[in-house]
Image 1: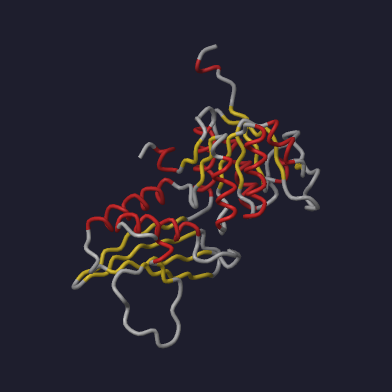
Image 2: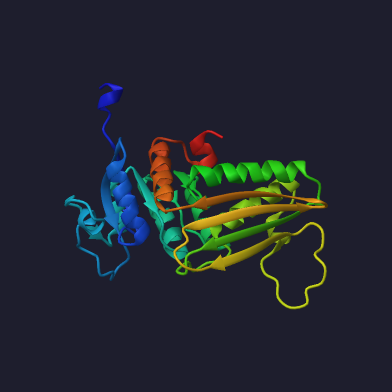
Length: 273
């Protein structure tokens, strides 16, 4: 069979009834080499049984939204998961059980959730990212480079803003940028993060990485990494004007993940950075 005749990759979508899930369904339909294999959501969701295409504003696809996650993984070569931390941990185990590659965009994960994902990555390819846009991936790489190049005299602050409905703060992307900065400085983010200030805080110590989270309106996602030194300030900024860029990146990651050896990958690997 020629390369041009290669069958499209069968992609499953979890959380398919949500805003991001519907966008993923549309993006799969617009992407060459991809086809929607299955769509799922949590038990009891009002959208169960509805056609995933119709719900996403497309023509009827003949794929009903199901709460049978095992069947979804069995039908798919790769599954995209933008759901909740507890659900993602259980889905990672199912993916490993069925040998299905997994793309994870869920944020707000706790250590126990990450442990479950890492365990599954011993058996399957997992692409995990807090943000799937190419621009943010490059922003993280630049953040690490700048943090490595500038002395500790330059304070690092990360400011992010999202829509009023976002439930976690700082955003997963902001934390990923903080991790990139910490790595550039040879630090661990866990021991050097300041996640909020209030009242009489005293002078800023040298070394910590600060975070500020803003919420309001329908902002898709703005992130800035600020390096503030004596006499100058360097700011690296990314602004997403819509969420479609995240869906496009997730589908790109899904296509890339099929056939890859077990392991946990990020968008830098997908983009070849």
